[in-house]
Length: 492
Image (tube, rainbow, N blue to C red):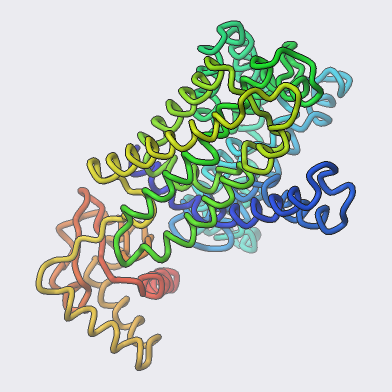
């Protein structure tokens, strides 16, 4: 299961890498027009619209990214399958479609279906599509239907499967959503403890996209709390109204950027530059705009234990702020921009204390993240295992460097052919994947693998990770070798 989650995490890195740019665009837009949010400035409206076009469609990005990353072959057909799967379920379970299916007015449809376009649905769609691609991308149909064989069959089967999934979710989704709303309503009477529980479950539910149900209870007028609306309109009790918002500022402005710094510091030396570019952009976006998905999705699947700690710390932050009646609010998210805008409102109570609390939480986040990553060897970005067998790394590095100077394509092709032969070829290899530096191969019989033949290509090392799982460490040129092996498999 852990291996599967880590693979999901790697698959999400492609869409996650786009999010910091979107957050920064929106942040600059809100900074230019903090009152009108684009209504009073064409430039602000342009920037905000550009950022929202990405953030509002994060579920689609997840569907495509996971379908591509979880498929055995990184082929565009798998990405199309993910998109098709997502479009089918979100269209069939949209409010208007559900109203038609149930024969009722659209206004009476369960509110759950208004939130059907969420990251959880995107992840489910991507996973279904990857399974369909892996299963049907090489199936040959009868001659009359030959046009739909192979990779063209994967999107078709994804659509068909999502019909069944949609039917299940037609009954399951409202129950899940309603249960979360009821749960949120029940804990809203627990004072600062309730604020802490809300913060904990708010983060814990993010991977599923179900935190929106809780947010609706506490932030808007679903159960009479309406924390955001009351805070900004000045209706409520000073030091109390805003308690479901204030505790997010220390986490989003300070805690998660500190966690990003810890992940950078614990990355392997030759990966630090790569990790720095992602974490710097994500940290800046979190501090200024309060958009934290680029940081959170970087570790939530590859290191679930860290995400659990993050959820606990978020709950603790909300509980502390609520206990001492420190309040501030946000209209977009808990970043510096909203903090500055809300700190002068009538119901803001000692908001500067949230900054002090944030500095403390930055130390806590950094210390815990760095300790846990190092202690338990958690596979956060830049820490993928790259064990190299002694005595082989230097020579292989020289050979690969030489190959990069003369006839690269021919060299990679020859290396791939020999590695594939050493793995046992078509009769033994069941799947080919790669990460940043290594081939990840699944085989039927490990005894059929000729390790010496593979090593003769000059690869730095081989790592046996399971009865049918073997990793061939190639280096940063692994993508080219993987592409050649996939090409060999497709031609067989």
